[in-house]
Length: 319
Ligand SMILES: [Mn+2]
Image (cartoon, rainbow, N blue to C red; front, side, top):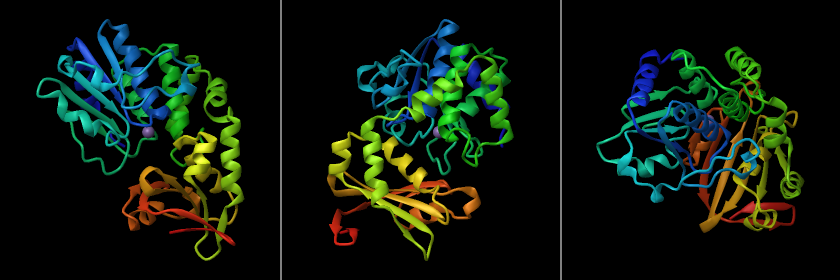
């Protein structure tokens, strides 16, 4: 695990010497990208700098009880005014599309914990050994002796809990628990975050899960548990991608399985595959994703294929 002492120092130097700073969250924003940009935003705002938070998608509605913030749409901003741009988490989901629009002026900082990131900036803080970008941002604040207020602690806790699946995934290291303990002491509302983001399910989400669970099949040969969701089902339940990835996570808890796969139809005749496994199961789902031209982590990967999900007598098939 890299300690990034030099990069953290450079990043803080860049923040302290900038007037206008842009924070960028990835498309289909999750709690890690949102938590990390909001925690940095809080720090930067409090030292009297101008900071905007941008994303190609709107602010996640379920996070409104925690934050009255919103995301700016990049096309509505004057990108030429920024001295520093910080992209946090999955920088190849959105940020890669606008990185070249800033010209020569700003310092670009990239914070990520995904493997195989090829996008680079002037400051690169990228290491897949971290549970979340929020863990990296916590280390940044700690290394620069920047005090955390309750709001910052809440945002960081949100991202850490999101990316560790509420401390259930194998990326929940002793260090993660140590950080969570410090954030809790600072007043991060653990129970509220759990309720708001994970247990507070809409009836439409439960109905969608019901459909996926009903159609699930286990392949005893390779230990795969697989299910499908059609475009029509997703539309009927008004489901988001978060709802789908959670289905893969829950199927993965079925005893005797090695990994789970959810195939879901998307716009334009595309089927998206979401794969999940757990460390103790000894599977590497990124290898399966790679067979279909996709990629990701050992325990969480995805791919896209062309096709349609068709109902058959004994269930369904992909055509
Ligand atoms: Mn993340």
